[in-house]
Length: 93
Image 1 (cartoon, helix red, strand yellow):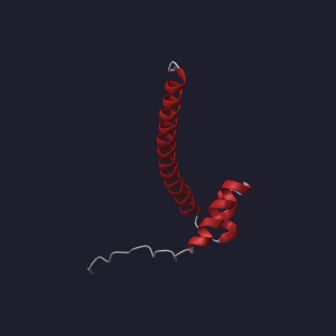
Image 2: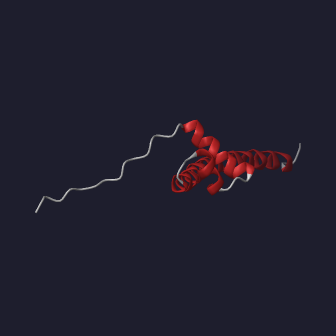
Image 3: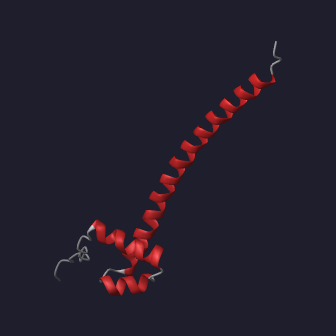
């Protein structure tokens, strides 16, 4: 009996990042379906779903950072407003 050989699936060719962005944009912004994008660009639909999920994760990370920045700015604004309010309520004299 011959030795067992291990068969591995060949990895797909690397996709240009600008093409990935274009595909994700067409799906998100232009309403193209994943199956239509897969057929049009010749890319596996599973890869496209992965990119969509991955960009959501990255997008959420950016949203969290932006949200934290805005919270800090709002806190600073509240302190300034509080200071002005306290100064305006002081008796003049």
